[in-house]
Image: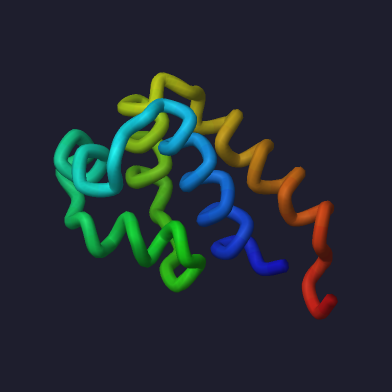
Length: 80
């Protein structure tokens, strides 16, 4: 699994756990709703500033988001 796919899975899980919509998260992070959707579907790779912004709004450390992404990648290695 590629990094951007794993990040998307993690982002969706964290966002849904907080009970907010893509639109709400996008507004709070000053991003476009469609960009959040693209991130969640693994079609875009976030910048460091995006990860920090998302972390701030979801009240989770950016390093934790990265760690969760790494763990997700181990679950299903690329090419399987």
